[in-house]
Figure 1 (cartoon, rainbow, N blue to C red):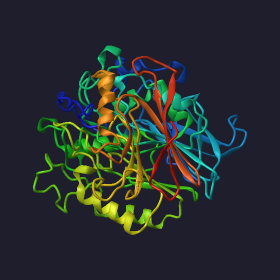
Figure 2: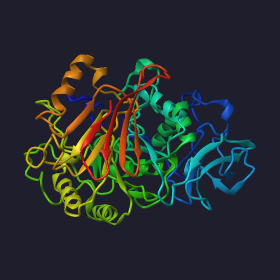
Figure 3: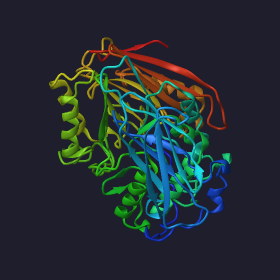
Length: 521
């Protein structure tokens, strides 16, 4: 989420200390007590567990990190992937070497796999065996159903990752779509609840490669996030906080001149992201995943690929300049090609910031110019392309706002849209709330937040916004069937202490070939 906590308040920015410097070719320093205190010695040297991601019909990325007691120039690692948890039927295996150049992370694109199949994998290094991971490949043809968990915005300092814990316990998820803000860049106490003693490491704002690596290490030591990765393949995309608040290709709101060249910070953040997440190596992060004939996932990069600087006001004379971009020419053409040529029943767009028009309903904060509303030329171009090509069953899934939303998508809800029938909408959009990053009820009374939800939802303010929840934390499960798509919003009881409790807050359905939302709860 950008530096607004709710529709009510803009949070002041806090600048941390300047950059620390490191040379990639140098051996990294041994873990300090600050990070070592989170080590579970039973996992040694695989303290960060295992992970998988970017599943295809015949391949999946498997990942781990080996943490030696002393700095080593290289570590040999064995890997195995099997159809059974006892590893009696190993279908592929191999050896790989890791080193400080990759921060001792290991990433294998395991191939020779069968479509729509569950697999187990593990690693061996330094005379130890890693935890066993569970993953699965994508289907090749039509299947009865698919379920994707959709998550966003996990801030270690704001509380416990109870939503990750509940996700880890589920056995019905095909993949977890993480839509960004996997980490936060702020220094200790810069943007969090320090009373919980979940303090960011390193203590300063992260700027260098060493800094980003250490922050990912801390997050990946969290047992709930570690379990979620161990049990499900992830498909991830970055938003801004993986780099710096309100980032774009050439700068960021939370990057100051005394913090060194932005390009160096951006590339350090990019390298650490590819090291620490189970993402297939590529020159760009936007990519697609085919799940047979039922769904195609289209993951967009709305930060580092081509985004130009935001404007400060809709009155800015460049607001509707053709050269201002969110996706850019190359990615836009790719996006249009995927929408037009796919044979999938459902086109699911992994989207970092709200695509639909959204009035937040406050005199001091109406339109979020960091979202698609701040880039109206490309926003309208996408709408016109979908409508003119009569592309059906487009579902945007979106993170960023720390709120749950359900839209009947239109960029002009006041002239070409009927809020009763949904006529004029051309897609639907489901926004997932945060895993734990703060939202409105942590700063304001719940009753006042509920009143504000009523003000902005399904009213003349936003007639196409059919559901909002600005209060709760959790995740979204998007279930796809040949005849309908269903969004179930799950909310955890609290993020201020470990908890096993969650509830289904709202269930929303859209029938195939329509853009009208139906509510079951």
